[in-house]
Image (cartoon, rainbow, N blue to C red; front, side, top):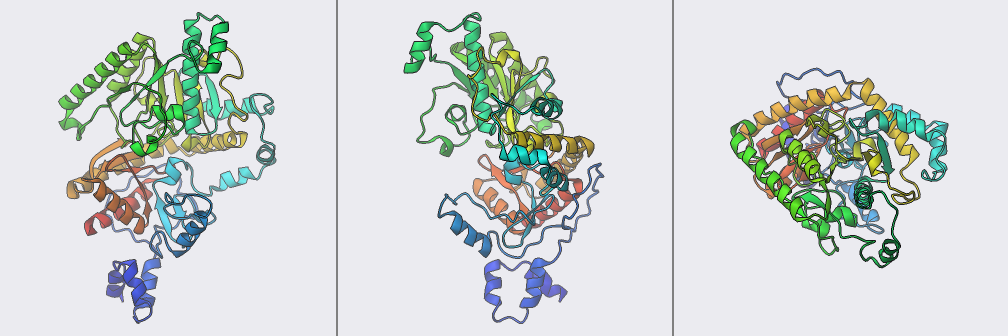
Length: 511
């Protein structure tokens, strides 16, 4: 029976279906598909101060291919009203728990992608569920306020105790928004308005400006721009999309502003063996930024992700970012750091840019995803000269700010930033070991904390690896041309990392 179970675990799902009606062995095969996960590693797994989420299974539990028949049925229903072509599978939210994603077919997958990097402290976290039952949350949910005109009396202390408690060093203001793209778009508007206010010397608008802007003409609608980087992703609204340079499919058919773009350093790994190349490459890109800004006096700001998530998890050294900040200071341009994906703790600190050793803070830092609410931090010079300018009906959502506050509280209490550092160090070390054994599928291991990535040789091999990881019970995602990115939760511990590494090695052995 042991031998049969071992063989059955490797039989493709299509072949299993053929065996169901004829093979006497099928009861054993069915049980093998649903058998508890058994880790086989001999790694020295470090300890972490973070608790394991209660109620989690011991590992992935797979019953069907992904997507299974029930998920496919639901996807067909979905497609009646919305485009389902991007849907991977259908989640059973009631049964998802901690780091584990339950799908509609009863599969339990270890989730290292987490709703595109936006779940922080576990599916169905009991503390969040309990908090959601409170009268304050319920009233905020059914009486959604217009925060810019009639905020509830709890709004200032809520902001102080949640978002402002983790504000980046040197920034004392926060603008709340609806999503990551909204945050970026509003940060751009703030930069443009601050620039024009400075140009006018603090004076009010001229009659010509007020009249011409209604015709989308100068001087009221000035030809200003934002510089971004090749490979960067900043969102899908028209301003943010004009600065997005990651994939053509995001931009094709859409009008865009003619904004400048700079090269992002093409870093080679391992870092220790490519120091001379990487230093020269960063110097080349910094010079290109300087030259580009000098050539575009209408460019008021530079925007950059600390790690280019959608573009392939590309990152430069801290020295590069310090140099970039210095250039913007020297030339009088604003510096916007887009931490929509990198912020929130995965990298071992609340904000990746705080690991750069900047001598002066960015002018704006955007956030969303892991914090479950969105917006940007800034200082007073990014407040518009008049009200109703950077504005909309809701200006965020109090319920989401309450959720962010609870996530922040749990993260601090349970030492989840430290957990991300410990788990990330362990994962990176072990991924390096696997890259030496399976370089076709795992190379160029990189990242900070558990915000990690590696490359496969080709896009096709990357896609094959991601597919088979999912069939083996690990939900993961790709980025860039040929990269696999890890976006686990803050409650993803070394134990979970060990399971991930087991599955990764098992899959790469078979491919």
